[in-house]
Length: 99
Image (cartoon, rainbow, N blue to C red; front, side, top):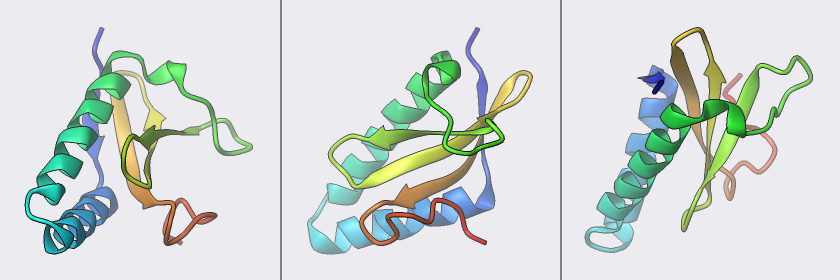
């Protein structure tokens, strides 16, 4: 069963910021970032429980985005995967969620 991906507003803003940055750096690089992110979302939707926990409560998980210094931070619910952040590991190596 594939899970439904629910992207929270914070994650959408993270994605938009990254896209704009990469498009300003090089034409179509932002598009490549979005393509990679889509692949990550598809992997998470198929097997979200494959990925390890990042918190002591064993709720949040993450998956690294290939080619780019980002991780996707998410939680599994009954039939959905909630994406809380598309975390820039270069800019904020330790802080995965906004406080």
